[in-house]
Length: 88
Image 1: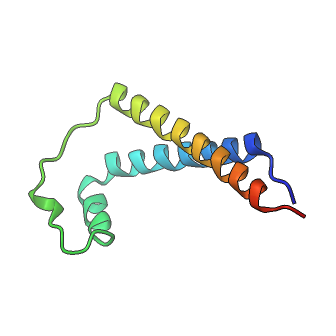
Image 2: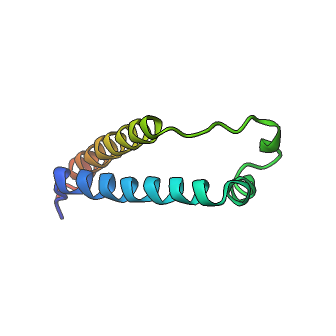
């Protein structure tokens, strides 16, 4: 089955954009809870000692754009590599 490079790239980019926006909203609404949540994924690193930065709107937009573009490129490359190996 041949994958559509653009379709996979767009699907991953859209999913990443939604996840990024939801994550940012959760961090804004529950800053302490989100820090405790991320501690579950980073073993033996004490994130409470790091300074908490205030997210600006421009920082949010820049992070969103970088995440979405990176996800599109990754999805496109994934589909391309998959298609190269799927020779039927």
